[in-house]
Length: 181
Figure 1 (cartoon, one colour):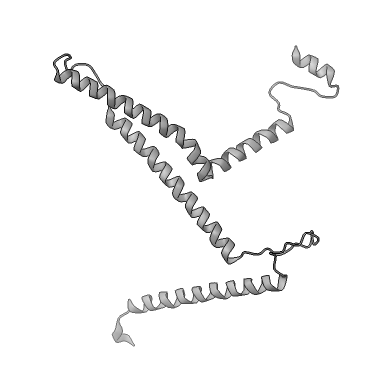
Figure 2 (tube, rainbow, N blue to C red):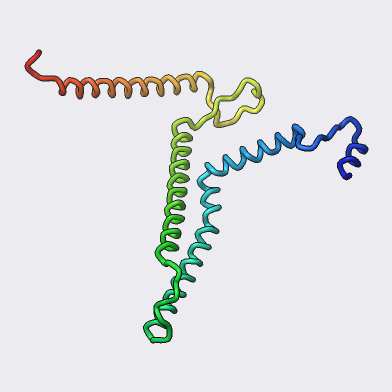
């Protein structure tokens, strides 16, 4: 009934059950893209894992205290060994697994940061675009300077490529018998 009232208020819109409007589909796609980007972001993943780590640590300490109390009661002769206790080793493994994931996130974040720093160091200046010539940055380089930098990078890449080719030929040459020359 509410949808009929909405149709009456907005003439020209026909709402059918099960069909989504283009804007809702776009919103869903945008939310999926954001969640995928957040999944790959190591800092965001780290922030998401911290509450899980806290919960795992609390669970680990709770199980440890229950097991300690249970073992103390058995040692004092108050209880028998028949009652089941929670497994400490499984909760410890869960805690360590989360610690490993956090360590990987931190290492990945560090690698991303160092790559970003290296990128800024080796190509620190931007080339002003033709679409916005009025917003020339003080740190930007001219197109000729940019071309020179790119040419030097290409030359360096060619040198590395040639060095690798020579090395592979030397390695392949050592594998052949020496007497056939």
